[in-house]
Length: 139
Figure: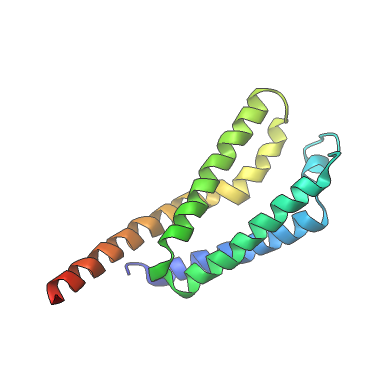
């Protein structure tokens, strides 16, 4: 796979980041509300649950780092979430429900990962096509 070591590093870092962010958000589910100057949530358990889900993705990203040739689906679903999350946040900000300061959530959780995940998906797709061609040639 093209840029294999780069992809291994990206997904190892993404895994560690997700586990750290997820753990912190599960332990302190009001942090974003305090940071953005919003009223504290009446249901912090929802944000804590989001933290758990984000944290679980960390283990999946570590699996991609361990074996990049088999991580296309995990990375594709991860990137989809990293695109859909900001779309939802833009709607919240545009409606006035959340302040602009809450966009910090998307900078580290989403935006910084778009390019490396997209590069990985392009490389993994190319590697998968090359492997299929190689198998077909041997048959």
